[in-house]
Length: 152
Image (tube, rainbow, N blue to C red; front, side):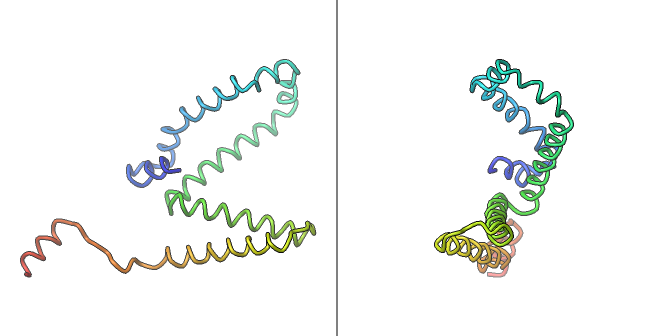
Protein backbone atom coordinates (compact mmCIF):
# COMPACT_ATOMS: atom_id res chain seq x y z
CA UNK A 1 0.00 0.00 0.00
CA UNK A 2 2.81 2.39 0.76
CA UNK A 3 4.43 1.83 -2.64
CA UNK A 4 1.05 2.22 -4.34
CA UNK A 5 0.42 5.50 -2.54
CA UNK A 6 3.95 6.65 -3.39
CA UNK A 7 3.40 5.98 -7.10
CA UNK A 8 -0.07 7.52 -7.23
CA UNK A 9 0.52 10.58 -5.05
CA UNK A 10 4.23 11.45 -5.10
CA UNK A 11 5.10 10.31 -8.62
CA UNK A 12 1.69 11.41 -9.98
CA UNK A 13 1.25 8.18 -11.96
CA UNK A 14 -2.15 7.21 -13.27
CA UNK A 15 -3.89 4.10 -12.02
CA UNK A 16 -3.02 2.18 -15.19
CA UNK A 17 0.65 3.28 -15.05
CA UNK A 18 0.86 2.15 -11.43
CA UNK A 19 -0.71 -1.20 -12.29
CA UNK A 20 1.80 -1.66 -15.13
CA UNK A 21 4.63 -0.89 -12.72
CA UNK A 22 3.46 -3.17 -9.89
CA UNK A 23 1.85 -6.06 -11.79
CA UNK A 24 5.02 -7.82 -13.11
CA UNK A 25 6.71 -8.26 -9.70
CA UNK A 26 3.40 -9.24 -8.12
CA UNK A 27 2.75 -11.81 -10.84
CA UNK A 28 6.30 -13.17 -10.46
CA UNK A 29 5.85 -13.61 -6.70
CA UNK A 30 2.48 -15.34 -7.12
CA UNK A 31 3.88 -17.77 -9.71
CA UNK A 32 6.92 -18.39 -7.51
CA UNK A 33 4.79 -19.23 -4.47
CA UNK A 34 2.47 -21.43 -6.54
CA UNK A 35 5.37 -23.32 -8.08
CA UNK A 36 7.35 -23.88 -4.90
CA UNK A 37 4.41 -24.04 -2.52
CA UNK A 38 3.37 -27.31 -4.10
CA UNK A 39 0.04 -26.14 -5.49
CA UNK A 40 0.93 -26.73 -9.14
CA UNK A 41 2.22 -30.20 -8.33
CA UNK A 42 -0.90 -31.04 -6.34
CA UNK A 43 -3.20 -29.85 -9.12
CA UNK A 44 -1.19 -31.84 -11.66
CA UNK A 45 -1.24 -35.05 -9.59
CA UNK A 46 -4.94 -34.90 -8.81
CA UNK A 47 -5.98 -33.83 -12.32
CA UNK A 48 -7.85 -30.80 -11.03
CA UNK A 49 -6.99 -28.84 -14.17
CA UNK A 50 -10.20 -30.28 -15.58
CA UNK A 51 -12.18 -28.30 -12.99
CA UNK A 52 -10.72 -25.07 -14.39
CA UNK A 53 -11.55 -26.14 -17.95
CA UNK A 54 -15.09 -27.20 -17.03
CA UNK A 55 -15.78 -23.89 -15.23
CA UNK A 56 -13.74 -21.55 -17.41
CA UNK A 57 -16.49 -18.90 -17.50
CA UNK A 58 -16.57 -18.73 -13.71
CA UNK A 59 -12.78 -18.50 -13.50
CA UNK A 60 -12.81 -15.76 -16.14
CA UNK A 61 -15.50 -13.86 -14.20
CA UNK A 62 -13.45 -14.19 -11.00
CA UNK A 63 -10.35 -12.86 -12.80
CA UNK A 64 -12.26 -9.87 -14.24
CA UNK A 65 -13.79 -9.07 -10.84
CA UNK A 66 -10.35 -9.35 -9.21
CA UNK A 67 -8.94 -6.90 -11.74
CA UNK A 68 -11.85 -4.53 -11.08
CA UNK A 69 -11.18 -4.71 -7.33
CA UNK A 70 -7.50 -3.87 -7.94
CA UNK A 71 -8.40 -0.83 -10.04
CA UNK A 72 -10.96 0.34 -7.48
CA UNK A 73 -8.39 -0.10 -4.70
CA UNK A 74 -5.93 2.07 -6.59
CA UNK A 75 -8.68 4.64 -7.25
CA UNK A 76 -9.49 4.85 -3.52
CA UNK A 77 -5.80 5.29 -2.66
CA UNK A 78 -5.41 7.95 -5.34
CA UNK A 79 -8.49 9.85 -4.16
CA UNK A 80 -7.76 9.54 -0.42
CA UNK A 81 -4.88 7.54 1.09
CA UNK A 82 -3.83 4.02 1.96
CA UNK A 83 -4.90 4.67 5.55
CA UNK A 84 -8.42 5.43 4.40
CA UNK A 85 -8.44 2.19 2.43
CA UNK A 86 -7.55 0.26 5.58
CA UNK A 87 -10.23 2.10 7.56
CA UNK A 88 -12.84 1.36 4.88
CA UNK A 89 -11.83 -2.31 4.98
CA UNK A 90 -12.38 -2.37 8.73
CA UNK A 91 -15.80 -0.75 8.37
CA UNK A 92 -16.71 -3.24 5.64
CA UNK A 93 -15.82 -6.11 7.99
CA UNK A 94 -17.96 -4.64 10.76
CA UNK A 95 -20.88 -4.29 8.37
CA UNK A 96 -20.52 -7.94 7.32
CA UNK A 97 -20.67 -9.02 10.98
CA UNK A 98 -23.66 -6.79 11.76
CA UNK A 99 -25.58 -8.04 8.71
CA UNK A 100 -24.67 -11.64 9.55
CA UNK A 101 -25.90 -11.21 13.11
CA UNK A 102 -29.13 -9.39 12.26
CA UNK A 103 -30.18 -11.07 9.02
CA UNK A 104 -28.79 -14.58 9.49
CA UNK A 105 -29.09 -14.63 13.31
CA UNK A 106 -25.46 -15.62 13.82
CA UNK A 107 -24.51 -15.48 17.50
CA UNK A 108 -22.15 -12.63 18.42
CA UNK A 109 -20.96 -12.39 22.05
CA UNK A 110 -21.37 -9.08 23.89
CA UNK A 111 -17.63 -8.39 24.03
CA UNK A 112 -17.41 -8.68 20.22
CA UNK A 113 -20.31 -6.22 19.82
CA UNK A 114 -18.42 -3.83 22.08
CA UNK A 115 -15.31 -4.13 19.90
CA UNK A 116 -17.23 -3.70 16.64
CA UNK A 117 -18.93 -0.55 17.86
CA UNK A 118 -15.58 0.69 19.18
CA UNK A 119 -14.16 0.28 15.68
CA UNK A 120 -17.09 2.19 14.22
CA UNK A 121 -16.54 5.00 16.72
CA UNK A 122 -12.87 5.04 15.75
CA UNK A 123 -13.86 5.27 12.09
CA UNK A 124 -16.18 8.19 12.81
CA UNK A 125 -13.44 9.96 14.78
CA UNK A 126 -10.91 9.36 12.00
CA UNK A 127 -13.34 10.72 9.43
CA UNK A 128 -14.12 13.78 11.53
CA UNK A 129 -10.47 14.65 12.20
CA UNK A 130 -9.29 13.90 8.68
CA UNK A 131 -11.91 16.23 7.21
CA UNK A 132 -10.89 19.18 9.41
CA UNK A 133 -8.17 21.46 8.07
CA UNK A 134 -4.94 21.40 10.01
CA UNK A 135 -4.67 24.05 12.71
CA UNK A 136 -1.05 24.76 11.88
CA UNK A 137 -0.18 24.98 8.21
CA UNK A 138 3.33 25.79 7.24
CA UNK A 139 3.89 27.15 3.77
CA UNK A 140 7.46 26.49 2.74
CA UNK A 141 7.31 28.09 -0.67
CA UNK A 142 10.18 30.49 -1.47
CA UNK A 143 7.75 33.32 -2.27
CA UNK A 144 6.33 33.27 1.24
CA UNK A 145 9.78 33.45 2.80
CA UNK A 146 10.78 36.36 0.56
CA UNK A 147 7.56 38.21 1.37
CA UNK A 148 8.09 37.73 5.10
CA UNK A 149 11.62 39.16 4.82
CA UNK A 150 10.29 42.18 2.98
CA UNK A 151 7.53 42.73 5.54
CA UNK A 152 9.79 42.41 8.58
